[in-house]
Image (cartoon, rainbow, N blue to C red; front, side, top):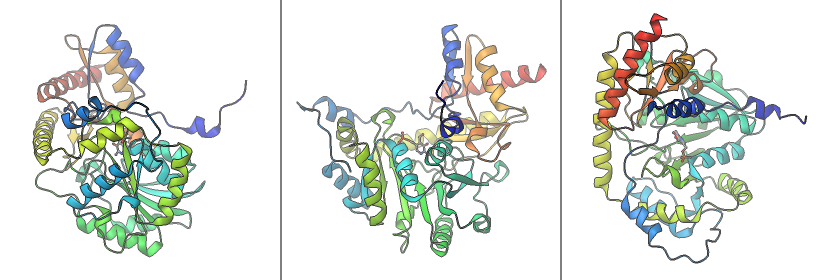
Length: 397
Ligand SMILES: Cc1ncc(COP(=O)(O)O)c(C=O)c1O
């Protein structure tokens, strides 16, 4: 039989999606599965975005421009200007989700065997994109014991080798909810300038910051223009995960010109979804005020409920809509599968994402899970109660 590539064999399965067959089997048995595993918000997509597609009278669904429609890119630049981020439409490539922007970024700045430094735990698919690009992840562990605070900058510097090309951060972080301070962004900026590296920031959760904290973008740092690459997406901002629209932004012309070649290979981003995403930019600020209030109250409730469970440790997120919880068990992968295969309370069980896949260091996060608080409060409370009963039962075995 012809053989599969080494790259394909090494490609990690997503910890968020790999248990789906067990969840499907549970559903077929008639068990209701509460999904805490995936960041699919239940918040409604703004009507203005859906109406733009419904009311459109396109007769030929053409390819769009490789870099995305000009009208949309100009509006994106306008959106950033409102956030004190000054970019030009030419600095933007519209992509098929933030996911494609991440793979374009890696392809553009890294060769086989190059290294990228990423604070862990991090968005699990960074492992997948790095494997696909032939790039080695050099992780820096942050700890649940201090709310996943950024490790000292000196730790980053220790990891820099001649192969290091970039530092990648997710701000606010998935899965930790960690929000970088202005000072931390400046420290990282100085470091990348000193060692002539890129600083890639995944800012897809930019709007979701809590307790009066404000997001500070790497695009706001003066003098960082040639080093800064931002990944963005409409998926979470407007609850439009299925649109598959994101973008890559950089003031570095060589980065954009090179990323354009990757973009040309895939022709263009989806046309209807760009129409919806352009219209979504008309969404009034009140939408975000309501959404953020909702996430804050869900977060507070979730943390309170989790803290009631014996032996459970949880970090309080300052942004995004995930949290990492440490459980009184040894192997969260086994526990998560057991929840789907062998446990239920009155016909209900929960699906969680085992956190080990959010780390690159083997062995870390084995007793942790990621929970997405994208469900209504009533469902969250029920899910945590089920989790509590499950832990008791599981630890009796
Ligand atoms: C941190 C982060 N970056 C990027 C993505 C990719 O999002 P999309 O491809 O839907 O834009 C996600 C999705 O969950 C994410 O959490």
